[in-house]
Image (tube, rainbow, N blue to C red; front, side, top):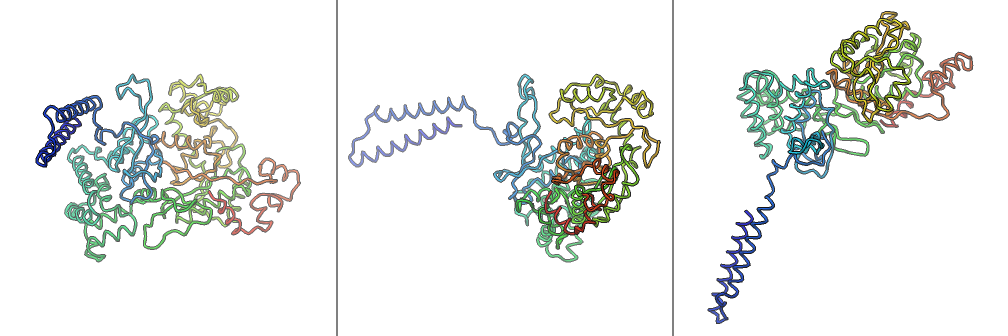
Length: 616
């Protein structure tokens, strides 16, 4: 192309020069001599044409954008990036919706990029260069894909692929992904119809919103006359694509805009199949969460971000000074928990965790769970359990439900057995000091290659309470080479023959907090687990357990713990003061316990404001 273009330009220049010479001869000027300048010009043009052709042959023209996609990217793997100033329809609303629906949204990092003007993009995982003609020994950039519909399809296919791996999300996430793609049905026509609707919705993106709304409405009014969903009997990618064509009207203002385009906000319009379908999709909790994730990336102030408005009037109160919104939280769909261990009295350090969990649960019209983490019978007493409930009342905190981890012992045991059968855990009798050194040196245990059958036998021996089983513990098989020490095969189960204050001597082995917490959080419906920053290293382990067991993922919200100077908060040392008569009791005004500071006269409302003002 470059050579032909240069040749055409040379011919044009030669013709122009010839015309100028002819005009000059008429004016009496000296004509160009044959074989003179005209020959030089022709030679120069031929040389330029040849040079351009050689360059074009040596350096191929730039490929189309679709070919260049996936070759190189500055985006880290699994990072979803988009412009926070773009309209909602230019943000990855479909991608976020399917990620929430398939329980994989926490696998992706949402990134705000003010310099991105080509639509949303997703960084792909790194891969071996053998896929690109290399020797397969090098790891190269995975590239990126662009476009909301394309990213949504990738997320769904990845969810299906992940279900077949030992540490995939599995469970209902994979089943939902197949339903959304239409692959769960044996009908090829359903899959083709879904693809057709997605292509149709994508083709409408170049038109204005009024034109898109009218086009979609004319299509859906006929298609949904006797149906609930566009294709089949459940939500599919076709529904999400058409919903996005309407402007993704999950927020109240966008719904009113669609109504205005359709005609008016009267009963006749609201009886239209399109309107009924639109409001049904908009009310889905996953759609609301995806909207909040897309909107919430916009930073309003240093501490606050934008929040989606799903009703005409604000459904939540303004954030208290110092507090930040919960990521992906929507009104009525938030569950928090406060999981104290009944091994002592609550002190002022616990107050921040209690009050923050209670604040978020009430702000989002959600639920607060008070769960006693009673997995260590050696330290727990009924006395401490009762005192904690009393202290919650002194702080003005009234949990919606009180639960116990011990109620889930049998369920947790079944999950532990599942890990053994799946090759995700093994039994180990390595002495504690040696195990610690091996983990520090990143050396595999001698039992790591243990067969599931042998591990099952040792697990039953440990749970029997015998002396031979006391040396054994269950370890998760994660990654002994990980830079994160908590991922180097942590202990999940160990023997303890001390009678439990609730279950007595029924169990002789108990799960550790690291195993019990992510399981029970998921089973109890917790949406946001508030944890102090000291647990940051364990957050990866927390997510691995839920993903490996195919459990619903729980979002972690970190906050900084309070650092009190000249104040003793150690339970062991505070117990010494009480037992040796150095204080009048756990409610001594000099004590940092909740009952101590309340007796000292600190106002609970002031304490709540102070704790929340410290921020999360």
